[in-house]
Amino acid sequence: MSIYIDTEWASLAKAGEELCGDHVEVVRTAEALVAVLADGLGSGVKANILSTLTAKIIATMVKNGATLEETIETISHTLPICQKRNLAYSTFTIIQITREGQGYVVEFDNPSLFFVRAGKLSAPTWQEREIDGLKIRESKFQVMPGDLLVTVSDGVVHAGIGGVLNLGWQWEEVGAYIEKLVNLHPDAQTLSKWLITACGQLYASEPGDDTTALVLKIRTPRTLTVAVGPPQHREDDVQIAKLIREEPGSKVICGGTTGSIIAREWGTDIKVNLKDLDPEVPPYGRLRGVDLVTEGIITLSKTLEALKKGETQPEGERKNAVSLLSKLLLDSDKIQFLVGKAINPAHQNPDLPLNLALKMQVVKEIAETLEERGKKVDLLYF
Image 1 (cartoon, rainbow, N blue to C red):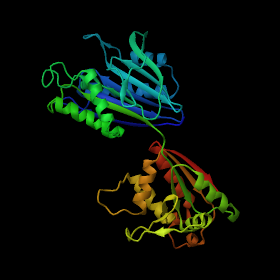
Image 2 (image 1 turned 30 degrees about the vertical axis):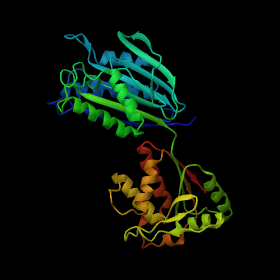
Image 3 (image 1 turned 180 degrees about the horizontal axis):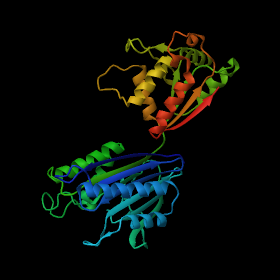
Image 4 (image 1 turned 90 degrees about the horizontal axis):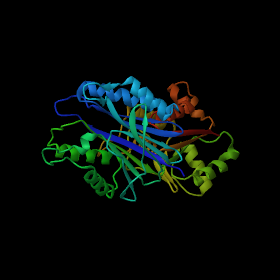
C-alpha cells in the first residue's frame, strides 16, 4: 500500500502574549513521518522555549532511530518537573507513520487523539505504562487512505470555559465537530484553520490558553511524470513514448522536440494555446493523454526561479506555462523526471545565457528545490 500524509497545523497564542506556548515539529524521512505537538507549561516566551525544545528533541531523536524509552528519558532529564506545581515542563503527543502505513501514537498529558475513518470517530486501542517517571499512553494501528488524525493542545478542549461554555469545549463535542467538517472533505490546512477559528470564536477572540490543532490526512500519493528533452539515441523514442503513456498520474512534456516525438509516436497532434499568451513566457500546448506541453529550457529556468522564490499564482492572474507547471509540481507528491541527454544545437550559442546550455543542471536544481519541500523526486536519464 502506498500512502502520502498531508500535515498542517494552526495555533492561537494566549490573549496578551505574542508567542504561542505550543510548538509543532514535523520531520519526513524515506521511511516514515514523525509529527510532535508539545505544550509548554504556562504561556508566553518561557512556554514557547520549553515546547520548542521538547518537540525538536523528540522529532530529532525519533527520526534518528532512538527508542521511545531513550527519547522520553532524554526529555525527562532535559526538562525536569516543576517543583512548585509538580508538573512536567511540557506535555506532548508523538505521531509516527511509516510509508507502509503503520501508525504509532504516544501521548503524555495531552488531550487524546481524534482518529477518523470513513467519516466517523474511531477509538484506537490504548496501553498505559510508565517510562522514567512519566505515565504515557501509546497506541499502534494501521492507517489507510482517507483516514484523518487530529491532535490538539488542551487550549482546544478548554475553549469557551467560564464564558460561552461553562465546562469548555469537551473532547466529545470537538470530535463531533470534526466529524461534521470531515464530511465537507477539507484538506489538512483548511481543517486545522476551521478548528482554530471555532476555538477563537468560543474564546470570544480572547484565548484563555495557547491553542493548537495538528491535522494529518492520509491519502493516495499524487504522481507526476515530466519528460524533458529528447533521448540521446533516436531508437529510444519508442521506449520513452511507451513509458510516458504507461505511467500513472499527471504528465508533462517540456520541449518542442520532445513533444513532437511523443505526438508522432502516439499518432496525434499538439494544440498550442493562443489565449493565454505571455510576452515573457513561451506558450504552452495540450496533447491528448498529457496534462501540459511546454517549451523547454526557458520555461524550466523560469519555473526554477518561481519555485525558489516560493511564488504562487495570484487569483485572477493570467495563467502561463510557468504557473501551470509550478502548480503541477507543487501539487504532486512523487515526481519522476525523464531527462533526455540529446544536445539541442540551438542552446550551444555562446551569446545565450549560460543556464540555457545546462538543461540537466536546471532540472537537477528543480528536483532539489522540490525535495526541500518534502517531495519524492527521481531523475532518469536517456
